[in-house]
Amino acid sequence: MGAYETLGLQPVINAWGTVTAMGGSLMAPEVLEAMSEASRSFVDLRALHRRAGEAIARMLGVPAACVTSGASAGLTVAAAACMGRNDSTIVAQLPDTTGLRNVGLILSRHRNRYDQAVRLSGMTLSDVGTTASATIEDVASAISDRTGMFLYLAESEFVPGSLPLGQIAAALAPDGIPLVVDAAAELPPHSNIAAYLEQGADLVVVSGGKEIRGPQSSGLILGSERLIGYCEAHCFPNHSIGRGMKTDKETIVGLFTAVELFVRRDEQAAFDAWETIVAEVVCALCPVDGLQVRRGFPTGPGVQPVAIPRVYVTSVRYSAEELRDRLLDSDPPVAVGVENDEIAINPQCLSPAQVPVVIRAVIEANA
Ligand SMILES: *Cc1c(COP(=O)(O)O)cnc(C)c1O
Image 1 (cartoon, rainbow, N blue to C red):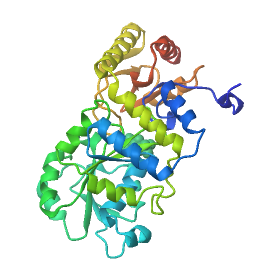
Image 2: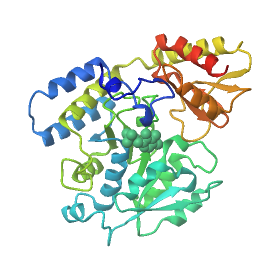
Image 3: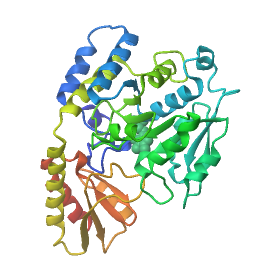
Image 4: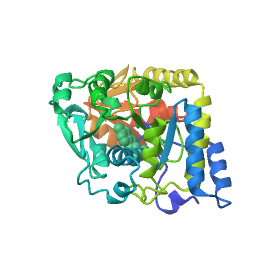
């Protein structure tokens, strides 16, 4: 009997995506093997943290990387680094930000539940523009001698009220204000990381437990050696704002191994496999009485990554929320997303063998 069963829980078929609430992603056997091996001996954790960061940076083709306990922790550490650099007095002082450049800027349209992670450092966030519109002049006039960083939400790059990353980078450059991109779930494609840095991001924060398929409680901050050095000062295992955001030896080794697999993965083959699943689901559900079915891509914020096709389904009998709940009540439970008034079936975390189960569950949930 597995622990889930002992605890009275049933494994879920995940047609929602790499959402944290469903467990993020599944680790490859090689990752679990490496974690198990790491668990069998002691190691200098500080050296492991640093060496793994260096190796991961080389693999991802970026100057430097800092391992964190998730993208959320990465945002906290990045904000602390922007305010405090590697000044040991400030490292110990945070979250008291007296005397520091302690205001972060963010487009109103980019506000989201994860920006609390920035505020955890002691930094406050100040909105630029309105949720309907923002101009680059709004950004320029918001900058003051208290501005410590600019937080940019990658998934909202193209929504109304957003501005292109490159334009914001150009507006910040004269004052040397660091631009931090929350790209937690914006992989694939792999090329996004380099693209954000090329467009002028100073730090890019990603989750290790989403498409990278490392431990769920892992993440990365990527950027220049200087800024990543500052991040390390505020990050576990140092006594700092990040001390409680622990990355144990198994997590660090697991993430390192997952990145090795991630950079070798045939991305086109993955996209082809997702298209095949989407086509199979569309084909099976289209003829079903009472369902409307289409292939599409997310258009709003909050549904990542935007590059993966979805199957959108509406039922004449049930609202999207009702259909989602009925699917979660299926045996086995099937998790799907809801976008506007449609359910969204995301192939990202589905195995080919699970596809017929999802199809059957949707047909039965609509009955
Ligand atoms: C998932 C997510 C995070 C948090 O990532 P963790 O690795 O779970 O801490 C932060 N920001 C966005 C936009 C996310 O989607």
